[in-house]
Image 1: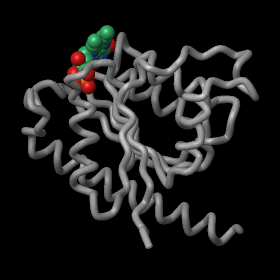
Image 2: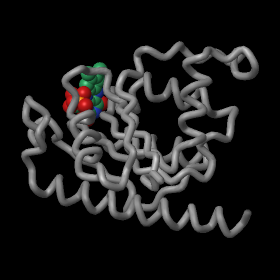
Image 3: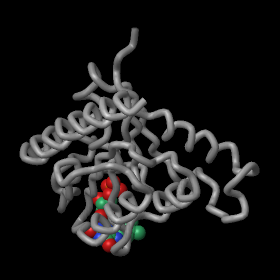
Image 4: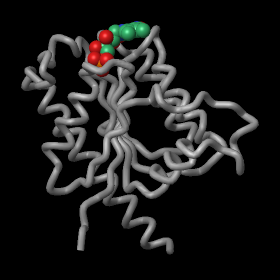
Length: 187
Ligand SMILES: Cc1cc2nc3c(=O)[nH]c(=O)nc-3n(C[C@H](O)[C@H](O)[C@H](O)COP(=O)(O)O)c2cc1C
């Protein structure tokens, strides 16, 4: 039996050579014995949100995305800040889910890896709180000056960043276990 946790990693970057994607790959690789980790890394492919398409006539790609989120044991978002906000591609897929409960009570890890990133990180936390995900201070992380911490071939050069990511992942695993136990108890 496969008892690995199904975790979805969402990369908010619109770049091919993304430091945020490198971070998600680092988590995927270091947790491969515990996570069945799927990375969604091209948000530019998703149709633009329209309010009149939120019910039965939702585009297939969005319906598939919602089901993935619903079935996941947890979500890790890793994103840069764009113009003091979260990137439009990330905001778009979250907007598609606001009228649903697919994110409700989901354990999430929230990483903003950017040049500066403070405003985007605050915004990300507000949005994820609004759509009722579960996170703690220990499952959120702001990585500033990300370009200097990751090599061009996607390797994390900064040891402290690796330690911080490992700490976040441990806290995320604890939160995921705790919430799964609560759900089993309430059934
Ligand atoms: C359109 C655009 C807007 C940006 N705006 C910000 C910003 O407001 N704050 C910031 O910290 N970095 C900003 N940056 C720089 C990104 O933080 C930096 O390029 C980061 O490495 C991107 O992450 P990635 O390597 O995963 O693509 C911006 C980059 C782009 C492309």
